Image (cartoon, rainbow, N blue to C red; front, side):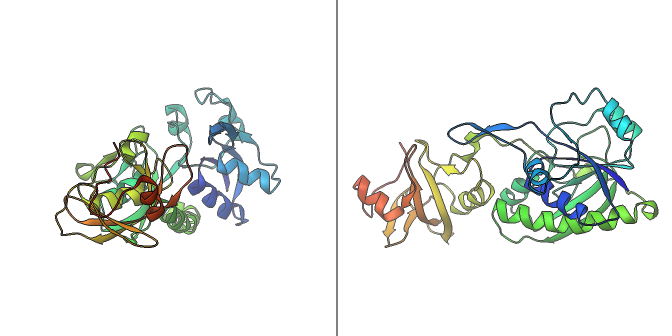
Length: 302
């Protein structure tokens, strides 16, 4: 089976790698995003799918600097399947209409359609996490379903959840593709649909209102943009202390050797590390010592 693979991040890379390890499939090309500036030095970084192919010295052609509306290269390759996994751009109507396009989406559709489904499942504290494999249509993530796999909410951070769901996807897509001629796609229940947005840096800002909601933000935004106070101070290694107490926002309730406990209007949090803008990450108790803050004071980020 000749597959043209559209995909960019780690989630897609893991699936691509698994397909390459199965001789039933022949990857005839990778379409991915362009290299983009990364980190403080803004050095160009390749998509993880491209990095992977280069690391194994693959001769699979990589298409980055292309205009997708010029679809000649797709017709020239003539794939049996176009598999789209977290590619990052819309697929043109001409391609969807004339090729067998399949998409792996990291949610239990029709919930969490859009750009950040795993973060959305974490933030909503969904009971189940999962992935959906669907035939692509002209609308966002609303194609007929070929299969769904799900697990109980594992309460993982974004990196851990992405890794787990990519493992599930890698095995499931092989099963789906090998049985594709015998599967009857089922339409989604569009009335139950929900949508998630593209994450912005400002989404990581927190106020000490609800400890559980802050904890979910920490899990969802651990890779980027992190969680931070109004002044930009980032919080790391967060856990729930308890969920029911009533406190001043940001009150320092206790200082331990390796952590501090911060009060919220509802509940309290264990915080192990803090980082001011442009500074290194430090132990939370050492951070408070440097700021001359003690138990009973308020960490407000102003």
